[in-house]
Length: 58
Ligand SMILES: [Zn+2]
Image (cartoon, rainbow, N blue to C red; front, side):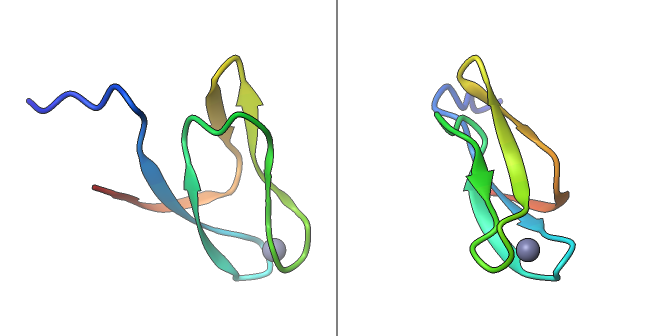
C-alpha cells in the first residue's frame, strides 16, 4: 500500500454539471467556479466533500 499523507485530489461534479478538481485537505471551503455552490467544507484540515465525487486522481 502506498501511503498518501498529503491528501489527494478528487474530481467532483457540481449540481450545475461543472466538473472541478478539489483537494481533500483544503484549508478552506471550496466553491464551484461556475455557480458558487459549496463543493467541500473544511473540517479541521480535512475537507468534507459535499458534491458528487467522480474519481480520485493519483
Ligand atoms: Zn456549480
